[in-house]
Image (cartoon, rainbow, N blue to C red; front, side, top):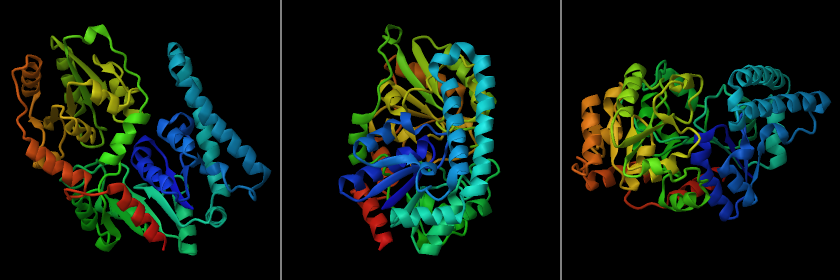
Length: 423
């Protein structure tokens, strides 16, 4: 059995196509969520895999026969606590915002406390060894997860004892050309994050170079391209994507714009971004909506008083279909926009990092609010053309999606690599 471990929206997005490919080719695969807070029952990609016959569950529900009644009670309570907290945050409860937040936070706190106690008491190396032995694990596939999160350490220790290979697969697309792109990131923390995996898969040479500079051995790092954005999966993805946007009359005749934000930790100038929201809201004939990053957590409050409509609940792919123009800072959704031929405006002035699509001149580089306003008005009036070429776009897409190759069967390469690692 090839075991895949997921924890959040982003890594599910990038790991699902690999599981799909291996399932279709009749390899035994299972997907286990290591984050008890994540709602696996309402994830359309995981439900798609379930319909194909793939086992999808929380790892805490499996291989627990020897852990006893106390474990079963504690596990039930912490999983139920997170489920209740999710319910309080659902759409139909929004009219009770204050009460919802109080109750949701209390129940969630109970869940976290019990999960922490259960993890310490039951989810050690012995438990992980039982999982690997009972499942007949051939390989363990994670995303680029930190070793101290959830029960990763236990699984890696068990895998080492049984000589089962461990792989770190991409959970996003690495876009940055400068080092230490996040606040508080260090080369040492990057090295510690990756060094205990047997194999590290990245999508492009840029990411391999960054990890190698951190001290990770180059022979452990393999460039295989992007499973999420390769042609084979993009064709399938459009068939399973839930549609939420309704055609509404107020958009008729307007230039439709989606602003895909990036988490503040990536050296974002939040105050200036909020001022940009204000400017965009005042443009005539242009409808702008904002999609906070899918990993947005406690910083979500910065969008509370935004003058732009928050479309957090709508898929980024559907928003890209709907939009006439995409605004990005460091979001990989620019790949989706460029593959669809949508104008992609990169708001360079809103962060301190530098990006690969900027280096390839594969986007419209915007250096300030006035440039942004002028560019959108030109596009609104049909008087402007994007100042980047299809040739530059295609060169960058080949680098970022196909690992620098003009032709590549990305999903077959992932499948072959995982299967061979088990041999």
